[in-house]
Amino acid sequence: RFRCTYAYAVPALMNFIAEEQARNPRDVGSLRTLISGGDSVPASLQERVQRLFRTALQEAYGMTEAVPLIANPKSAIRQGSLGVAAPEVQVRIVDLNDRDVPDGETGEIAVRTPGNCIGYWNDPIATEALLRNGWLHTGDLASRDGDGYYAFKGRKKEIIIRGGSNISPQEVEAALYQHSSVLEAAVVGVSDPILGERVIAFVSVRPTDAPSEKELIEFARQRLADYKTPERVLFIPQLPKGLTGKVQRRALKEMLLVQPDLLEKRSVAGV
Image (cartoon, rainbow, N blue to C red; front, side, top):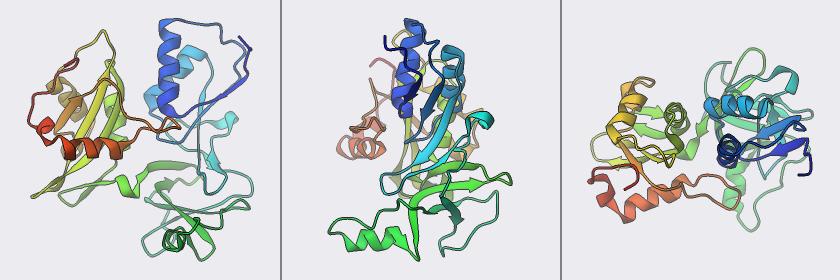
């Protein structure tokens, strides 16, 4: 209606915008820039947006405590990458001892910018964990390649540790999103006395589709290492989201704590 040239949305919202455009196409020829961030942007979503809107979806990364930090330049977008450091932003990838890790290895994103916050209100403990030696520690994991492009690897607090191996929920979700029936996917770890944690996936599917749990597990297995493959796929109408539209994986973990019998029932789409 307003011939917008620029649009930004978190991935969950961008996913539904793409779904609506596929179902009821509008004239979106005015669009020149589409940006998404705030959570991992699946490659399948980027490909779908490009096809439906004829405009590349640029992934970007930032946080409330700082400024926009990393973004894909429109002239050199790399699918599956956050992009490169923004002007006036210094970015490091560090290990648990705050030492820089080599390119290609995963570590925590630490940043120094003119817009860093000075701390959390009345919370000195959280402030001390956030700001160390002049660097803001984001709690997010990434790697950097030789060209200075950063790849998101997950959040430290959300990493699933199964049998001593680290699993990024976003990697498992990206595999599930490749299935044509999957509208939304979120992966969490649940406590296990032997393995430490088990991989559990929550999925909502398109109204016209009803894949089986076994089908989706086997689909994921073909694209992931065995230890990363979800042991269960639970179907729900839609994923819980916060006010900004981000998927709340913590709410899904709490759902399993309140309703542990969900893991004992056979899961069927639409039921």
